[in-house]
Image (cartoon, rainbow, N blue to C red; front, side, top):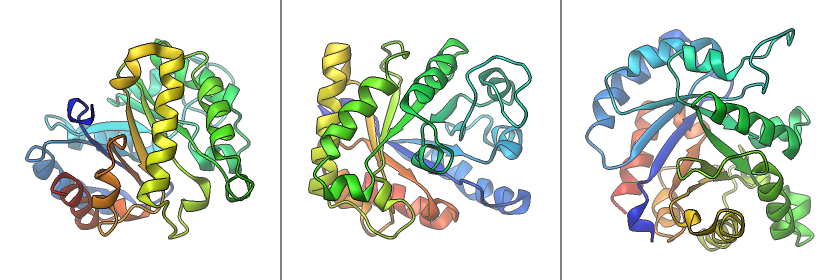
Amino acid sequence: MKNRRKEIYAANWKMNLDSGDIRGFMERIVPYAGTVDAEVMIFPPAVYLSSVAEQAAGSPIGVGAQNMFWERNGAYTGEISALMIKDCGAGYVLCGHSERRHFFGESAEMVTRKAGAAQDEGLIPMICVGETLEEREQGETLEVLHKDIYCSLSDVKPDKRVIIAYEPVWAIGTGLTATPEDAETAIAYIRDQVRELWGDLADAIRILYGGSVKPGNIAELMACPNIDGALVGGASLHADSFIDIIQNGVNR
């Protein structure tokens, strides 16, 4: 079933890079993105969202925000809305990244409100789920994923464009990577949970792996039948390494 799902390689820059770095990155990635049989996405810091969208204009690169609030407007200092993201020229938004959940206390209930609000404004949410090291060591991975999927999708309308990213928290920025077998087991389980909620639509949903993805480990991950791409953090901060990840994944 994987051959019917187009792969996604997404760069999450987190709180990194400046306008000069971004200009150089975009000069490399824009001409490349049109040559590869995969979707390329970039999630820059919010202050650079308009600039990245402008530089990506006319290319197949998707641009998204790293976070949003669920209200359309109002007295929510420091937040941005789906309307603002859309107005910047972006079409995607990360919802529930592990760093939002664990540094800023976002619950699955908050995540689903964000994802539902994103859909209401025509944005495509990329919903992130994953377990901590403690949960993994206690054998609770599947239990955590079950709860995350059911809660995080509760306000989300069934739509094959929705994207899910499996991010084991213990692998984010640590240099540790889930084995291909562990990642495949978790992502296959996520797909089964989506199937319980959305039926056969689950076969069209793309589920990515995120967690210390590098040029050297992407091919093994992408060989797994249920893994449809990668959400890349640190290795996406340099165009050359990000392009190597895409190339190695596509040409595995």
